[in-house]
Amino acid sequence: MFKALMVERDGDGPATSAIREISEDDLPEAEVLVAVDYTTVNYKDGLCMSPNGGGLVRKYPHVPGIDFAGTVEASSDDRYKAGDKVVLTGWRVGEAHWGGYAQKARVKADWLVPLPDGLTPRQAMAVGTAGFTAMLAVMALEDHGLKPGHGPVLVTGAAGGVGSVATAILSNLGYEVAAVTGRPETESYLKDLGATTIVPREEINETVKRPLESETWAGCVDAVGGDMLARVLGQMKYGASVSAVGLAGGAKLPATVVPFLLRGVNLLGIDSVMQPYENRLRAWERVAKDLPMDKLEEMMVEAKMSDLPGLCEDILKGQVKGRVVADVN
Ligand code: NDP
Image 1 (spheres, rainbow, N blue to C red):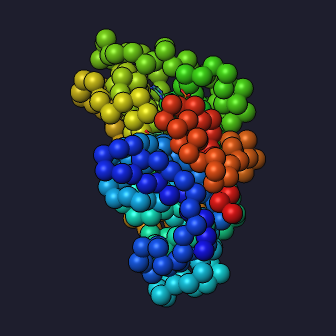
Image 2 (spheres, rainbow, N blue to C red; image 1 turned 135 degrees about the vertical axis):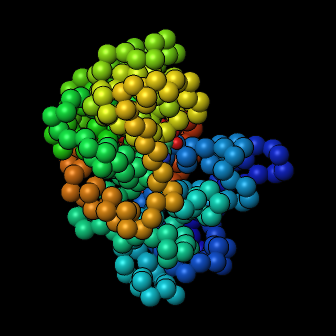
């Protein structure tokens, strides 16, 4: 028997969670059984733990947790054997399939990646989907020509998970980082991560009035969407790119097409969930190389399994700073 944070729901009533003792027989069928060392809290975990499952969880009882790192206990797939250290992010694990808020998980071999050299399971979960996605976003900007020296790169939702990791990676790569935050108290935290300028959220989170403003940003990692993304598009330098990662500020994009037509601005969509295996490996290798581990330590909020429900509520209110790393054992 082992512990799992189980979400239960009676009909259309609100879902509630409790730590339960379950057995391996309760786990879904799949090729690889993993003893989970660490999991984390992403915005999507907040949605999956919410009273209506955020539209993501369809079947109860459910074990959430979109990420985990751990050790293979048994595998019927040749790619993995007992003792291998592995990481899982994405593939709708923790949404449609039982996830990492448990001491064991059974998943498809296709969904796993080997723990990257240079990262411990704890560090991998401090990175988690949020950090992995931040890396994908930076890689997409580079693939579209961004180089240090081109000018300031804007990071929105900077004190959150995606934003914190993006700030630390960009700064370490030699970029000048302008960090947008709605929490002025995080200024010294963001500067420690490498932000050179702090942009107060209210300065930039307004409805677009003019489709083009001064050319200011050489690139942008956007975790917010909505009015902020629409406004940022009109502030990009000629030919610059924005990686659209998140919707913490809303799913709508009340923008005009003028920045695309007159300034050749690129809006790059970033998806971490269905990311192909080769690019996953490439991104994890880049994380191990380009994210300074002392900065990752600064971002970490340590937690236990029993802390997860509260942290999942907090992240939906934009109140989690940096990255949660939860020891489930
Ligand atoms: P966090 O809650 O940790 O970070 C989001 C940050 O956005 C907050 O910390 C806050 O930053 C800012 N924010 C929150 N609410 C608002 C608002 N109403 N208006 C403006 N800014 C706001 O979440 P994550 O970093 O884990 O995820 C960020 C987003 O990225 C989410 O929407 C998530 O769903 C998405 N995501 C997408 C992925 C993909 O594959 N495309 C993968 C991972 C995440 P501050 O306090 O500094 O202003």
